[in-house]
Amino acid sequence: MTLSNSNVPIVRREALKSRLEQLTRMVEIRAVEERIQKLFAEGHVRGSTHLASGQEAVSVGIARSIDPDDIVTCTYRGHGHALALGVSPTAVIGEICGRVIGCAGGLGGSMHLVEPEVGLLPTAAIVGAGLPIACGAAMAARARGKDRIAVSIFGDGSANIGAFHESLNFAAIRKLPVVFVCENNLYGEYTRIQLSTPVEDIAIRAASYNMPGVVADGQDVDKVAEAMATAVARARRGEGPTLIEMKTYRYSGHSRSDPATYRPAGELDAWLKRDPIDILAERLAGEKILAPGGLDQLKADISDAVERATMEVLDSPAPDLGEILAHVGAHSAGGDQRWNFWSK
Image (cartoon, rainbow, N blue to C red):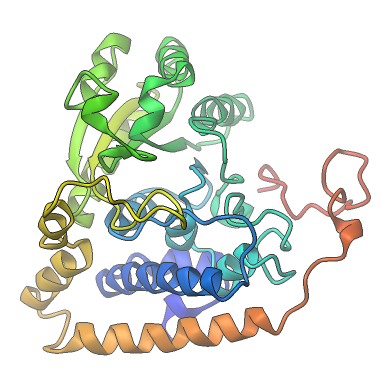
């Protein structure tokens, strides 16, 4: 068993120090997303799902660049981020299928993944909601004297709402230890960025708040990590926030019901030529880390592992109806500290 096949979040996070494990995790994310599509079609998923196939380098590049104690907020398109940070396929698939084996006990679903052990706050269904929450997490870390930073991951569509500007402004004034990461996959739901945003590079908006604005290649995990490393070091030194724009692309439509027919002909094919998994695999082959034919074998092994995780999920029960309100407030019935982010 490789480290990344462990179900222990902190062990899986530690595994990302290995170059081969970074590729393994990217392949795993892709395989889990593909299985989720099938599970939805098979009737095992209630509601909808929002996939991010094609954006794996962003997830793994961020995860390998921060500490498990750091706090992360991200959107409903967060399956890959949860897996990259260390949540196991069983816990992610289980949550999406609404089973007790899920990372939130089957109570959150696809849009609300969470794991305090590796710093993942509950993912948010509201566009841009994670931006001010990340500011609050950074303030809490500072107040508690913790050497933590906060990372807010959001889509390009969020860059046009009030919470984006308010959060960047507030973080800059307070010099909060926050890294704002915009996953610019060219589409805000169904709308291409040129139809909603008057600038090509969202990163230039950082200048309005006197913080660095960086454009990074979101298809290259090493470029993602390089941009993150600089921003994370700046935040830890107390020098304030950074806005990083990751140029990337999602292969699927906005949600399960979206065939993405609005995309220009040939656009998807052009991005597939710069697939993040292929880019890293070719690099590792050149570094003699990945043997010839190693990617195909890795994909087969991961596919088998994801299928085993799926069977385990489908064999597990759904939560009892009485559990729905068990962890809502301080005096709720669920008195455990399962989701306490400040216990460390």
